[in-house]
Amino acid sequence: MHHLNIYNGGVYSAVNPLLGCTSLAGNFPLRLGDKLINAGLFARVVFVPIAIGATPIAQWATGGALQDRIATAYRRCVAVGLPVTGVLWHQGETDADSVISQATYQAALSSVIDRTRLAGFSEPFFVAKVAYPFNTSASNVRAAQAAVINHGNEIWEGPDTDTLTGANRDGGNVHFSAATGANNHADAWKTAIDARF
Image (cartoon, rainbow, N blue to C red):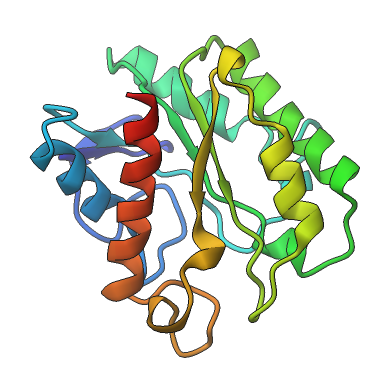
């Protein structure tokens, strides 16, 4: 298993902390990669971590500071001959902890997906249901995430990670715990990926 560093395009063995993203103890990709390979779904897994913690959807949407981050990752992969199988989108907690309408979030998320398509990426884009700030779950954000799903356009349901509570969260009840939470998060993503592949 490997990962590509979005900042320099280099491909490295996958070990925590992964390069290119903000890292937390409950980081799940390595567990997910093992599960996908062990299940025989893929012979090789290369992650391209781009996540930046505590960022609202507006930063990723058109006009935001991170608007080209996914497209840049895609171009890095193309440059080194790596096929891209899918995008795993897990964002929403910061927006759920603020005042944002379903329409505003949905429009912003749609623009994120549209920008990946303009960059040439046509493979599946998986959208998790996630809006879990401090023991609450914002229905407006979750509804927006559900509303963008369109299998004909290769936009697929990711896991509902708001259901991962209790021992799945760390002591602050926000991030996933390093063992239980990360493992169950990986299982949930594998189930979502299995539904498409």
